[in-house]
Image (cartoon, rainbow, N blue to C red; front, side, top):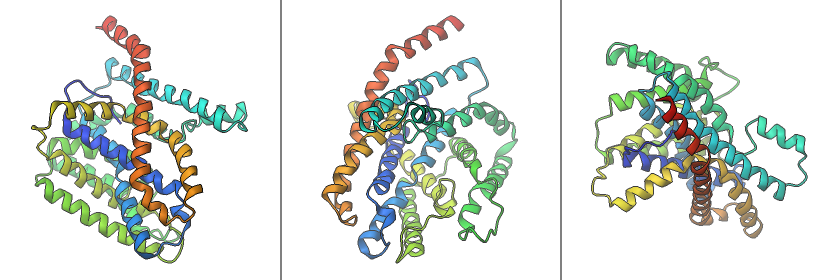
Length: 352
């Protein structure tokens, strides 16, 4: 997730809002026991397709980082921009701590401290742990990428990264039989970042409807593959489903291309502003959404015993968590603006 700019592209705001929706949707399946029921029948097939499409969420956030931060350099102003990310994270830690003290009083002070130090006081804080490292690398990745002469050299670097991070995830379906070395697969955030930078410089030229059609077909193919490999048993986790896999990468690129190619010039100003604010609150919403997951889903599971029938509640639960998370994030943003935000602005003025 990236720091919001004053000069906004409404298409990118829409992409970020879709990515957040994907995060909330992926967690729907986790909290409704989808993974612990036999994968069979039409209903579970639909659920598998929906989950497959939602897995584009993290890839979209990382592609957007490359899209928006590709010209950043190792300068003081860039590193100061990290204050917002850390500020929102610490505020999310604060409300997460209050929630845990209320809902999980059995946790000791030592356990809470360990969760904070391990980036899981907010349950989904792993993203911040990953992003902090990427943030420090971004200026140097930009220098490297811009130093490559011409489109061909950049393509060669991307193909190398894809071979190291994306292809093994797809090919090594059987974890006991490694057809390709997979030691470097956790480098996928760098692959997505540089791919996003490349797409900003050399966008894919196709109509939005063509990109959306490709996205739908790839979701159908990948979802059917997931369904087939798990058919008749509990959901089978595999490398081909991880964030950096070639399937998730392809779906994310097609979705980004489709949304970014849409003509939103006639979108009403109030709607652009709404997407802009939602986009600005997306980081905090990502981090605090676990609070509403842990509040709402136990109620649903208690009242709807059959996990298959819980799919009927997806149109209710996902928007509820989505909206509540954004609302709480808006409060965190307001607190940040009145405290650390003001301090950051004064610091930037003094350093000019």
